[in-house]
Length: 375
Image (cartoon, rainbow, N blue to C red; front, side):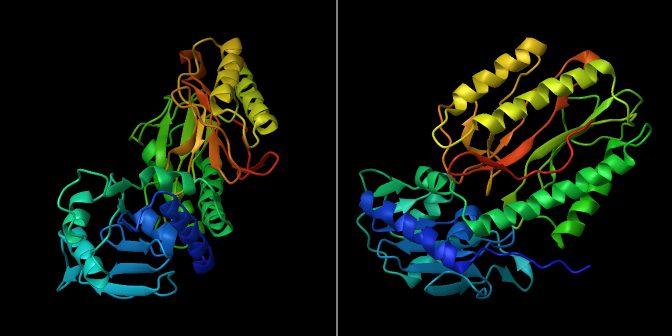
């Protein structure tokens, strides 16, 4: 069956460029030069192959120039596109980042009083290409925090990509419930779930399919181990569709019949998810929400909940808002986030984690993961 591919909308990309330009003006930055796959895609709609590089220059006046590998892509939000050879005679060049930034610099004026760059990605090549002699003084501005904040607010084209990734997880869990039984190996479950995700995506996924595929364990990559009667199988799935991630978790009883203590723990976890849905709205403290969830789970099994309550997601698996006592974030409209309470003890064989995905609305949340939670 043919699956219609999704792409970011150039109109929304232009709006995102405008929002970044407003921040450039506030920071007195002449231009931003960006090289990470995530930010190039966010602003132009073009995401290069994972083994190829691209670079984009956004001027404070709104002009956008894209340096793309090999050939000019279709339907991108750029005023000018220049290309460079990412391959020679079909061989990938390892110096692509240097070449991409030099090609970009050749296409625009190198002169700028203040340059915005991603401190976390490719800075030396950008500095050399744009004739910035060193990192001293105030000529450079780190754009990472600015873009991380802007990327929290998801536009409708981004939500469509995320919903497609979540659709992959729905198919994966449906297949898992069909095949999980005593004797099946974790690797067999992984391979069959991979096939289910690809069928929904209509193409290979951008990134691995999540972290956790282990039975009788809080998590980890799939092994050759066979599932056994009475155990619980934690599946924390995170397929990435064209750069946008899903991240949600279900726990499945291998025998199909959870023990009483397993069912009781499941009910305590579901109560936390209900609390999240009733509580979250713009302005709510993520740290306070974590503390409330921790107290609820400690009431059931003290010390059995040992990780974050959740996190934002989108073009990266873990972003703000952080439902975590190490941060002091607040929810904002347009955030997409996970809530993933869990309980882990030996008598549960070896634990339960349930994870839902949400988008924050003007007065609450919309749940994006509307498929079964049952063990």
